[in-house]
Amino acid sequence: MTQRLLYTIICWGFGVGLSGYFGLFSLFPLPLFALFVAIGIVTPVAIYYGNSTFRAYIQGLHLDYLTLFHLWRIPAALIFFYYGSQHLLPVNFVRNAAWGDLMAGLLVFLVLALPKNHWKYWGFHLFGMTDFVIAVATGLTFSLLQVPMMQTITTYPIVLIPLFGVGISGASHIMALDILIRRTTKALK
Image 1 (cartoon, rainbow, N blue to C red):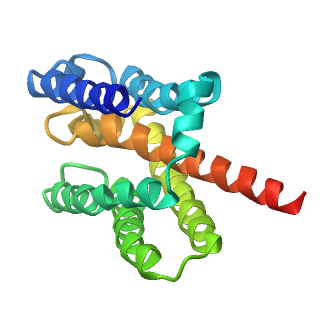
Image 2: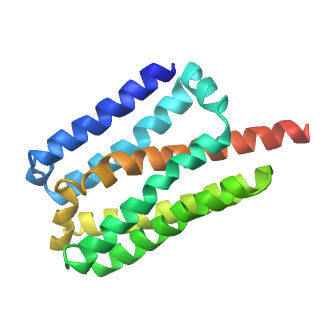
């Protein structure tokens, strides 16, 4: 399962990167790009809930792994800040996406350093999911409204954030919260 999952993630990232490099996503209107982002979020979640083997594999992972992954949000935040400083993205989008990503990425270090306790994972994944919802909602809203500066999000290399990182991040938060709910429910029985 591990190799297949890793292979799928690599292919997904490579496909988005290659398509972005050749400018394919820039050919689509922003509302359709927003749909691609939504599909990238829904697909791994649907696989998680629809495939019991995959779900069992993810539920067997230590929550540190689903938390550690979010370190990628630090460079994503820095990229958003850079693009914002160049006036290539809307100010409100940069504010809503970059600051939350930076805080979530930095919180990973704190979560991993804290003593073993399931509440630290609850706090991190609820915070991360809240940031995720705010950032994605802002990006989708600006894309659906076809705000011209959002066209930048369809270009390489920044396209990797919404079409690759966002889907995996959102799915990992949902999966981690599902694991926490299941463990808490089981402990209460």
